[in-house]
Length: 340
Image (cartoon, rainbow, N blue to C red; front, top):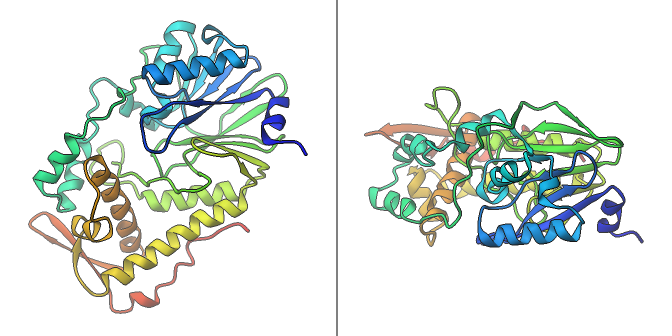
């Protein structure tokens, strides 16, 4: 029986496991060895990241100077950090969604635009200091001044014997994209879907005024449903193992959030919580940057429940407190669909 690697090799697609210093482990970069030679995600801008990327390219018989396109699924440093370097050494055109551009500029300060949301969450100053002082070991990715193509979703990238449809599928990031080879039923998933874990729905402001949060969990569920409705034989995620098919894994991702939403309601049970207070109940041991990830997770689920009329919200001295409504135990979640 043909293995996924053998099937992909017949399409001239090669996975390169690029080292990262993060607990999630290596990031999967994907080389499309057909003109124009293309790399989907690049790995982080670290010595180990560069070495493992170069080793993978060498095994595939491609020099870094031959890369003509780098497609960034989203701005996170483990996925996009080496794109600028490849642009410098090969002149590779970088493709990225327009909503990721502001986050890949020299002047961008990661936490600055989310400070109002952190204050509204009731985050104490000492915890904010713990987050800020947990320094990322990977340099922040910055786009080059030239050679960047902005995407919106719906575009078609063409090769001699393959076409890749760009899908804008936000939820993990506002400008997260995936790519679909519709003829061969291959889906480059980025961090939309992973085999054994679900990606964090990260807190993010809405462009252009950056005063309100994106409804990231609603976006994520919608994106997973779109993915579940496509014709996919194999999904190629940004981390971990290949995924055979799409419907089961899409249904599991939706079911995970269904379970989390119901768990939130059970934990709250008529009591009032700020986002930070509830985060500390659900994730009592998190430290440093993990606090930010946990706050994003809780914020996303409370925003979702509040938008569905399941929670009450009250502001007290700039902090929002949430409580369940009397009939919330009977709330219907039929807005969450799957395509099985």
